[in-house]
Image 1 (cartoon, helix red, strand yellow):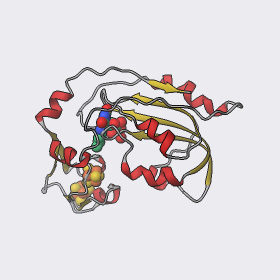
Image 2 (tube, protein in one colour):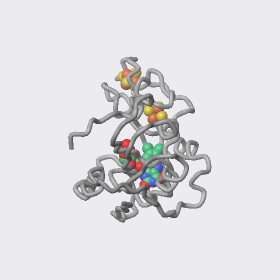
Image 3 (tube, helix red, strand yellow):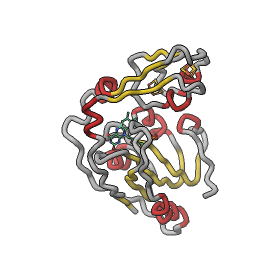
Length: 208
Ligand SMILES: Cc1cc2nc3c(=O)[nH]c(=O)nc-3n(C[C@H](O)[C@H](O)[C@H](O)COP(=O)(O)O)c2cc1C
Ligand code: SF4
Ligand code: SF4
């Protein structure tokens, strides 16, 4: 769509963008914490937000995005996609249905949207990091690791160095997908496995 793709950590907070299409993953039914600084400081004329989520519970993150941060939000949606914890996930989201939303950037008549409050699971915000750490185990194959620290460079949470993880880890799995030697892998708990057996609802909620 001719948009320049910028990784969240590389967004320049000193300039004013025109159209910003913000795409972020829902983590523990919320906005990932390491996005807050960007949301507080980004400057732009118009923003459309796509909150991707993996299963059934997207929580209330777009409502928070709209009312906690001062953003010129002209459109938004909860978009169900593959879950990073499901290996070989063959779910194929319908990306085309996002086109009318993104085309809102071309509208002359700009209106900041309202977002309705959605339900969150009780207790979703209690120690989410600890819950993730208990449910997902990251394993390092020392025979494959070449101590290049690509994992550390790609970790937004300063939680890994040369394959060794500390307790700042939120289990986003970025280190695993960026390891050039496939030395990192993950295992999920039985409870999480059972949760992933639940059917997806495939629902996409638009606001514009
Ligand atoms: C730490 C973490 C927490 C997550 N929590 C949720 C959740 O509460 N509900 C949900 O539906 N998906 C959840 N997901 C799945 C992500 O939203 C999904 O993987 C993401 O939207 C797809 O983008 P990705 O490839 O960047 O992970 C979580 C993923 C991670 C890594
Ligand atoms: S990126 Fe992979 S190979 Fe490099 S240090 Fe990390 S785990 Fe080891
Ligand atoms: S999963 Fe890897 S990249 Fe993500 S926070 Fe933990 S160490 Fe960092």
